[in-house]
Image (cartoon, rainbow, N blue to C red):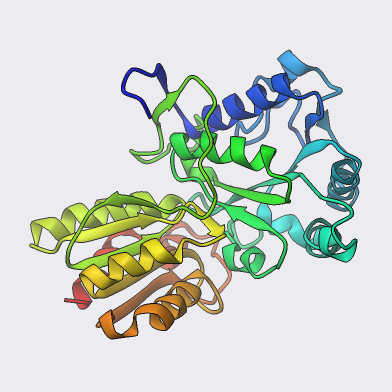
Length: 337
């Protein structure tokens, strides 16, 4: 980003909207559909202000049938449009599993490349606000396991805009997973960090390119979404104890930037993977396995910090207990030394 380039400090939700609005002005084939996305502007402000500019034909409220409107988005994409469909909570994917798993993800392959599916599926993810087991999951590993989908997870406004531009322009289906706690909406305060300067002009962030948010020498902390900010807080605490932590923001799960992770572990020798998804069969296991395959000789100690394999509790103290916090990351990193 050029130092002379004009920027504005934006919340993550406003950065997303900025990118969507730009793409809609540039391309009449881009439209947005979902539940409560028009007049309401999305319950997490994901479309706030778009209906006023683009009208109901391009910012479309839909009935409560994820099966119907995600299926419609797949069809529109195959016909040459570039739809963005919003899954209000990622937890609701089950009722549209066939549309996502078998149509959106696989139709290009099943057609022998004769059709593409250039669509974006946005989904709110994550807990920390006491909405219980059916509205608080991240499910990163569930979707990253499916061949045919690209998966991106922004952690700041800067990433949110650049990744959204790239997602809309991509000729393959992209799942864009935004964490509710990072959006900067009034009723759910965000931590320090997600609100960042964002270039006024359009720009893209390539998929598969992680970002080293903090350099370090003693331990590598790999994470994404909300936990980038908790990892950075943990790194400050660790520094006061003489431990230098490197923090890597994955930014995309598919493709995954294994090279950046491996280079860091070859320097530090220690790996902590932090994830708000369930511990088993998820991001923590995948990242650890890739490092073991590529740099086993350099790897001295591994710690995984994730949600235990239990439903997310409604109770505030219990939810806080199961979702990894800054102290959990500090303790894990300390154990590697």
